[in-house]
Length: 389
Image 1 (cartoon, rainbow, N blue to C red):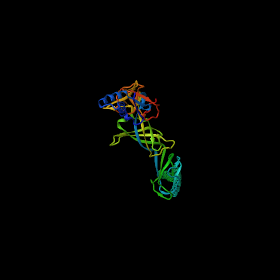
Image 2 (cartoon, one colour):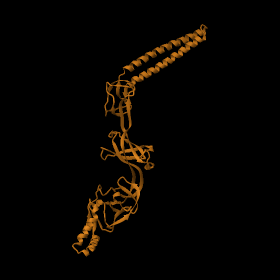
Image 3 (cartoon, rainbow, N blue to C red):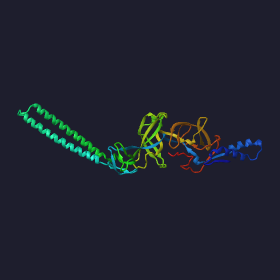
C-alpha cells in the first residue's frame, strides 16, 4: 500500500502528496484510464502522521483569562517640598540611594530660624514675668479690699490686667512652638523607607517655601493600571489574581492582585480601569516598566478540552479530524465558552474523552483515509499544545 507522510513542517501540502502518489500509481496509462487509476491510488493511500501532530481530548479545568497590560507605578511616592525659605546647606543623597524612615536627607540654613526661636523665648520670659507681677497685684488688692483700704473696682482692674498677662504668656508659648517647628523643618527627613527618584536642590541654592527638594518612591509595592472592556467587569472583583510578565525579565512571572476597580468608564474607549498591586519586596522591578499578562476572571469545572489547533472551521461550522480504527474521520463539534491559558478550548458535543485528533492542517483530505502515527511524542512539540493533566 502506498503511503503519504505529513512531515512536521509544511503539513498543509497533504492533498498534494496524495494526488502525487495517485499519479505515480497510475504510471503511464492512457488518458481514458487516468481517472480510474487516480481513484484507486487515492483509496490505497495511507496518511502518515508524526506523533507530535496528534493530540488527545481530555477533561481539564479551564480558566477564562482577560489580557491586561500597562506601566508599573510605585504605590507610594512623594515629592518633598521645603517648608521654610533659606539656603541649602547639605543634600545627603542622590538618585537611586535607598533611605530609611526618619533619616536626614537635606539641611537648610537655620540661622534665621534659630534667631526667631531665641526671640520668642525672650518674649515668653517677659510675658511670664508680667504674669507674675499681675498675680502679685491681684493678691495685694484682695488683702487691701478685705481691710476696706481700696474699692472693689481697683481689684477688678488688677484681675483684668492678670487675665491679659496670662493671655500674653499663652500667645508667647504658641509663637515659640511655631518658631521651633520652623527650625525643625529646616532639616528634611525621609517620611518612609524609600529610594530617591529625583533630586531638585543642590547645596548653595536658595529655596523658598514650597520649593521641590527631593522625590521619593517606595518600590516594595507597585501598581499596574490596566484597562478592561466594560462588558467583562461583572466578572472582575478585588482580590482576583493575575500573572504578568515584565519587559527585561524574560519568562519570569510576577503575581498581581486586583486592588481597586474604577467606578466609571473611560471616555471614548468605554473601558474600565483596573488597579493591580504587585509585591516587589525583592526590589527587582522599577517604576515605569511595562507589564502584560492575563487576569483569571472565571474558572470552569472539569470539562472536555482539546488544543485550539485541532479545531477547524468551514462555513461557520467547527469540526475536527479524528483518528478512529486507523482511519481519518471528520466530526462536527460544539464548543463552549471556556478557554484555557495553554491554548485549550472546551468541547461540549461531538467528542468523547480519549479521542485522538489531528492538530495540523490537512487541506483537501477526505474522510476514510487510512492513517498511521509514527515517532515518539515530544512534550514541547509545536503541534502538540500541552495536553498533559
